[in-house]
Image (cartoon, rainbow, N blue to C red):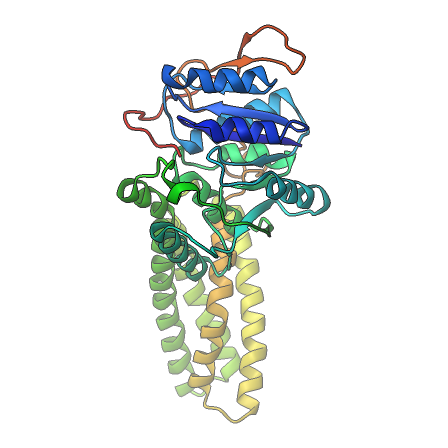
Length: 394
């Protein structure tokens, strides 16, 4: 297990944390902190820690990706625990996440804070709002969606590199994509620690909050569009169903015919409008999966409708009840299907990204082994440099 610490302009807390983790293998990413902080990273290197250095500040997400890529190449097959460098994460809590990572089978382990005691107002408010919105949009309730203490199995590293985002929004996007793709997320309770009212944080309240909420807003857009698409399909479904029952067609046959028309319309709208911003799977495969889903939903709908009709409910109100109950499940499944997994087979959708770092031309890593070998530079990967005009890393 490797401890990964992304760091931007750190203080003594980073050195203290490294000292406390003397029995662990630690990789630190210097996210373009500059020459003024070279002495801090020199102290870290003197303790045998391997340091990945960005030539300029790229953002926390970029720093994490650089660390994931380096660990996958330098320590293949090793799981990773990510911790912040500002002293918020105690060694005992890092160990708790590591233990859960080794013993459990979840794809993501979150060190979840309880936000008890003295917590800065902006932190308490921000975390409360974010986890509430996250839960409302995804249906997945997490106690702490903004924690930087996270554990990932080795097999997740390639997937983590495929998740978009280079700054503070990256960790939010990881959770959203994990929920979308059905990855299991576990939480381990950790202490809530804010040193000096979180004064060392480089988080800019307005700009970075906007970045964090952008993935949530995109998710909300999909929910809204899916709702409109479903409403259109539902109106077609109910209208055709009502007309057919008025023409003395049996309720179950009327439901089948109405669903055939509405499902075809709904499929076309969802593919090209609701989830059209994604890299879509091939039409034949998507159509087959949608047909399978529609068949299952129709079967459940028929059973529910038959049961409600046996209670002597009117046909149209009974159908409305069935449709409302099935809406949430249908959205969750379709969202997973339209958004391909990073492990999709070649040609079926987008393919897993090669291990690459978000750094222009080449990224070089200064390495000092625990045995005190001389410093050396190692080329890791090629990639494009995102906008790095402003600092974006805590």
